[in-house]
Length: 98
Length: 136
Image (cartoon, rainbow over all chains, first blue to last red; front, side, top):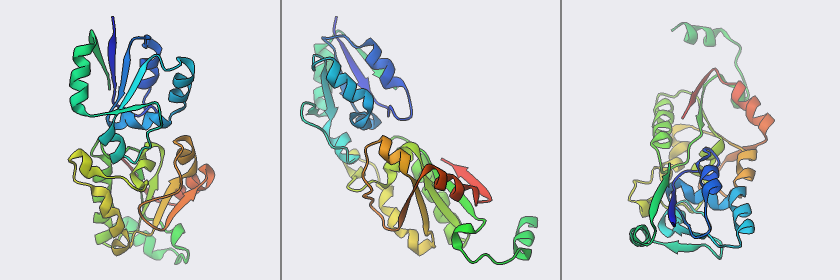
């Protein structure tokens, strides 16, 4: 059972992202959107990238990151909202963290 | 009315940073809520009535000042551009919490000039000099 995780809030002010990471499974996908883009610079993201050897697919909505002047590092794929629609079909369920 | 009478009887303060004006604390990121826009409206309102306003940016609020943002990508009216009007409203004191910048791995490049980056302690001291505080 794969899950699509939509993270929409900043981990610097809410603990949604921490809760999300605690339930992440290997075949899951993580999409950062809206203020969730700020989490690219959060220590939780650094430890996630280290821990899982990138088995969890991490993506970010490119316009959302660009609007916030958040730099997207290599290894994180940049997608559009149209891609999110497709992702919802490719996963068994969706959890929105907001 | 009483408070105005009181402030008139007090000795003139020479240093602008010690004036007893209004402090506005911005604590929210710019695009996902109306908080930043509301704070800006209130700041400009006080400014246009020639009331002393200082702006404080703390926590996720520091994202409001970061350079190279573009709200138009989100189909949002980019109120951040209005920050450059601060000088016309005599809003000169803009303070940023250094710790908040460091935590978020942000550099000190802002989209407006005359931003003062303060340590936790200096930030607290600057805030304590104000008579009224509004937090958004």
